[in-house]
Length: 574
Picture 1: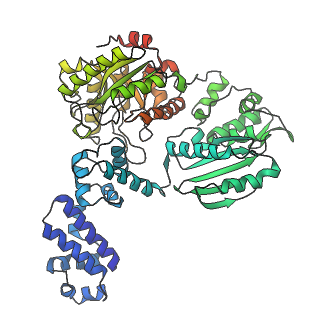
Picture 2: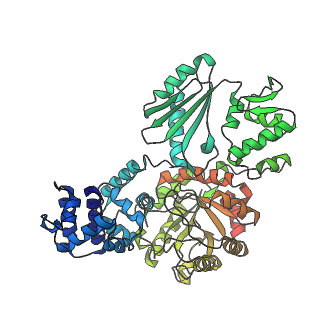
Picture 3: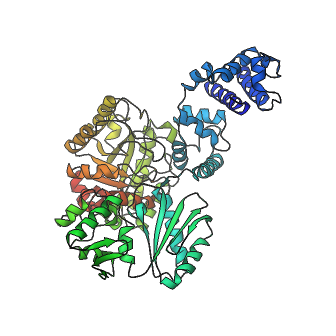
């Protein structure tokens, strides 16, 4: 080990000791030792071999022995033992500017934050606002720091891709040489995590070079990776790569299909074409040497005697076989969502008042809106004590009179305790119109215990919705481990819906499980888990996941009109 490696480990020792709340003098000894080694002018190996390390200012006998162990063996027993006390991901938090050991210690102990993703999510839910030593300004600085760290990570949430797409769509509106434009690839299929953004533009052959130049001049382009006649690849200032493909109008419908579908989907489509004596590629479907004309993507499918397969389904998950049998689902659309249940107000960790939330829901044409703040166990999110519940319910009663055109529901996002119970007495639970039961702590519980915990919450007669079922945070935290079949069985037997949490950091239920829930006859909700008014927009991501999971309007509880909802839930407003 060289000086740099040794100094780094000594610095980490100091950090871990501070996290453990160790003696200040011991912490300082490692800090001083790290600086001494880093600025050492002599040869570290010679000092170790000659046993003269303790002569270096700032290095005592005990520290000298640890450094010698490091240099000679490449390991330090004290370091390895201390490291076992902390999750490895915790040290990523120190990469955020302004986060030192004391702040990380508070985040770890008070909010159980272990990863950058958990920290980002906590900031977005305003959980640092009232945390000792933090506040709004610190929370905003941390979010900016996390954004900078994410820049070169290589994987991105679908929300990042949509943001890039919208900016580019606006940019290309000023280029009249672009005849048609669309996203493609995993973004168009609405995958929850993407590696890059694929866009497709129809242009005349003679305009390809100028349109490519125009794209490369986009203000957010940091580097031009490759530039050819039909493809331009760039990296944006946020780190994500964008590929622009340039095709003719005649090629566009075929290219849009080809560059949207997964590799497996496209392979099967080519096989269908081959069986019909046709050849299919990104430039067209050919009979001999002649391309069969197609004006739209739907025409491409019609040539192969198939109904149009929605982009979200093109993963080779049975969509082609369903199309051949004319059994494709009529996928839910954004406008099918009639109301929302999972909205947080300023009573817990939301930004807005209930009245502001109601007004937003009205402006968006919703028939009903539920207020579901955190329950009392969620102290980190200012969860509602019984007296706060009563106060909130009184306010809702008053707002119901003020806003008769929309139904305002009394909900709560109740923490599921370790034994599967909800965290209010029955006399409080019965005052709500509905309850979302959610996991927020002890997410790494043993598989069998976690299964019992979830099933217990589902069996509670007051539970109407199971919120963000696995507790995952995309690109940050894996979901909890439990027996899915047992949990789904309990959902079905107890007529409890499972949420598609539309927050782009969650998108939980996973789209791969949506189809399983649908086939078992389990109802779903699509909810934003909004903590500010702009969070209403996240429903778009949830709809994308629902569509990807073969979900239809009739599968979704909040796809129902309020009168239907009342009948379905036996709902009498309290």
